[in-house]
Amino acid sequence: MRIVQLVETLETGGLERIAVDLALAQKRAGDSPMLYCMFTGGPLADEARRAGIPVTEFHKEPGFSVKLLFRLARQLRRDAADVVHTHNPGVHHYGAISARMARVPAVVNTRHGPATSSGRAYQERYFRAVMPLTDRVVFVCEDSRRYLVEQRGLAGGKSVVILNGIELGGFLEKPAAPMSASPRVRFGAVGRMVPVKAHSILIHAFAQLSGKLPNAELRIVGGGPLADELKEQARKVGLDGRIRIEGLNHHIADVLQELDIFVMSSTSEGLPLVILEGMAAGLPVVSTRIGGVSEVAPEGDVSVLCTPGSASDLAEAMYKAATSCDLAVMGKKAREIAIAKFSLDQMWRSYQAVYAEALGRN
View 1 (cartoon, rainbow, N blue to C red):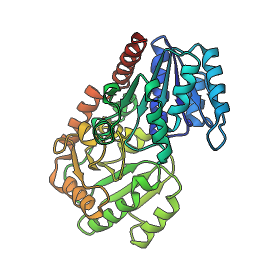
View 2: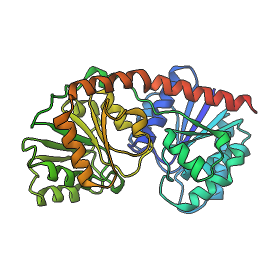
View 3: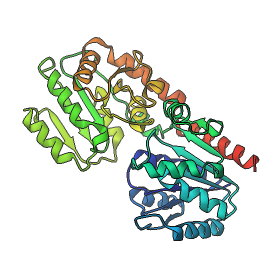
View 4: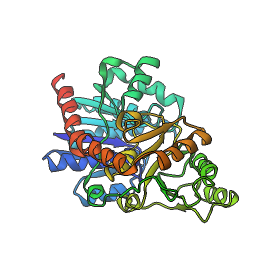
């Protein structure tokens, strides 16, 4: 099977990681995966190329481009694609239209969250306009499917849920060892420092509980445009000695190995890979109650969940996890769930079944 995945870029990110990991699994299985970047490549494009996966960059200019539709269709014909798999609404109208121009048999889209990739309303209108050209829409969690199908009226008959999966190996090789409830506890968050990740709220929450847990530490890893602002915030609350704000780290298993509790403070997500990675490393989870988190990290068993956007609620959840929970037992259960349900192989097999069904209907 010749499978083309269309993304905006292959910079470091969850959506992009899914696309590359899926292509790697497809190649191992004997298929012919290809990656198209509507704009430019990035570090993950280099990784894909090193693995022998072709990456084509189209360097799209701002604004709608009819020219790009013809360029995409021409490349799809040249590559003899059987399936075009687009990621999020921002690229889907280009992928769906050009696929039909090139007579590609099957078109599949993955929605990685309830919102568009850039929050632009016109992308949602375009997405709906090309639904007749789309065979399947994959949601990464039931929460996103329910919101877009039941509340926003997206065609439910074409929808299917495939939970994200990750390459488990590195996390299983370097498991964390969460401490039992103790005043000294190492909280950690991993994610790009942008507004939706709400790291500012996490710092406020940590400040609120810092007096109750005087030996607690917080580590935030990921870099991004808000990094300097967050460092200044930590300094202003007088906790820069106990809060570490760090840049991008490609060795996430090493970071997680040094934590006791994984924390996610985001205000909007689909099914973030970092939750699965934290669980695979054997960490209990404190998270805002958003997206598919409660679907994969059962509350009480492996997680303590709270209201998004509230520093006081997040502080309470962090304190509860640190003082009232058996972290080692929660971490062990989290790891068992990750191994049983969230492997890359399971995700790949589910997508293969969707591709086969879409091809069989044409």
